[in-house]
Length: 138
Image (cartoon, rainbow, N blue to C red):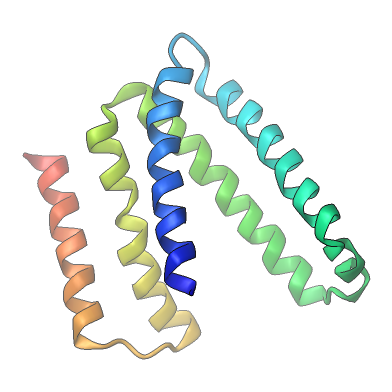
């Protein structure tokens, strides 16, 4: 079941690139990111409230807060840089390079989370990195 959510994530991430490229035309990329963030904030809290998941807030640990805040900071910076890249470059180049994050996530998960790396994952990460280099330096 997880893979269905992953495929949906990929599909909507692709739409982000296309919609954003059209939406940022003539707009400061940081302003565009801020507008997008408000929309995401409303949607996310609407889902949390509809599910009643907000009752879990009191049970969050200090570690939960620290790492969720760090994740939020990383997300914000990623979005700011992504929108600026989309403003300056073509979607067909920016979006695939952005997906270098997949290979980087594999490497970071091995280093910091001590996840096991299979040879297939390693080769896949190398292909992603190689493809990224081809797009940048072609």
